[in-house]
Structure formats: structure tokens, C-alpha cells
Length: 116
Length: 114
Image (cartoon, rainbow over all chains, first blue to last red; front, side):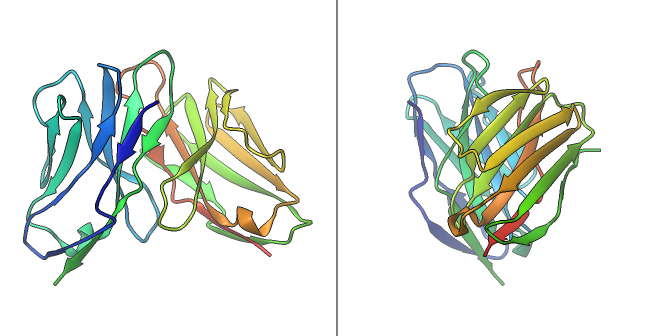
């Protein structure tokens, strides 16, 4: 069975600085997706970034980028130029591509505070 | 339109009440999901509908009854709930037939059972 581990329950960053959130996972599969979701106090779960396991290139979305190390099963999220609106709970998630599996495997989350 | 709309946003119900949560999306997604989320925890999958048919039930108690009347709507009927069922209930949808299948989430219904 697949598992996702986020080892940092809480983190903080100064506004305009860079922060990296860690995520490791365990799987025996070779094809899968990895996601970072953000959940601010407004409660809506918002997709931040997606990485396909077969792609070697790290995904980037504006100030958000990932460091995907497939052999090490590591998928960290880097937030550059942090903004107050980045304060939220961040969840790392895994989805298998096997069969018709629609289930997301979630990490426990990292609560990010952004200090002005 | 990339929205998943959930109503109501807040709900307080007694243990003998019957209520329903509603979810709507107009993105043409044929997979729809119900999740339960406790504070500071990740979402827990409850049900998955694929092409309006229930495809996954994660051993959810029968006091939760899902319904998918059409491809845009998803309901969760609640009856005889317990206080421990108080949580945020999230609806999500995704495409089914392509590899690009990230889920889009609604803002959730904050349910309190008294």
C-alpha cells in the first residue's frame, strides 16, 4: 500500500522569503501522480501543483516549484517570495495510475504561517 | 466555470434530524467524490461516483447515504448522525477519461451534530 509522509507539522516563513515543505512517499508503482494542495482558512482545497512521475522535469507554477526525486521518493514544494496569502495548510497527495483508481493518498499536512 | 458549489456552507442538526448536503459542478466531470475532514487532518474519502454510479464506498456507516441524480449533482443524505460526525464535508469532481485528473474541490459544508 502507498503512504505519504509530511514530516513538518508546522512551519513559518518571513514574507518575501523562500520556504520548502517536504514530502516523501512509498510505492512500488512506477507510474503515478503527485500533488500539492493548499487549504487556507476559507476551507477550499486548491491544487497548487501537479507532477507526473514519468516526467523528469520538475513542475513549476509561478512562485511554486517542486523538487521531484523519483529514486528517493521525495516531492518537496518550494514557495518563493512568500506572501501573506500563502498562509495555509499544505497537503501532499499521491494518486496511482493503476486501473481505474480514483483514490488520493494524503499526507498529514504542514501548517504554514507567513510572518509580515 | 471551474467551480464546485456546495450548499449549505454551515449546518447544525440534531441527532434525530434528516438533512441533505448538495454539490454541483458544471465542468463536465464524470467522477464526483464526498470527503469528510476533521480539523487539521487530511480529507478522508467516503464515496466516489463514476458516470453517476457508486464505484467506491469506503465502509461508510449507513446513516450517510449518497445520491447522484445526474452528472452535475451529488447529494449526501444524513440521518441519525452522531456528534462525532461533526466535521467539514468536502465535495470534489474530476475528469475520468484523461490522464489529467486532478480533483477540484468545493468550499465544504461545516456540519455540527448536537
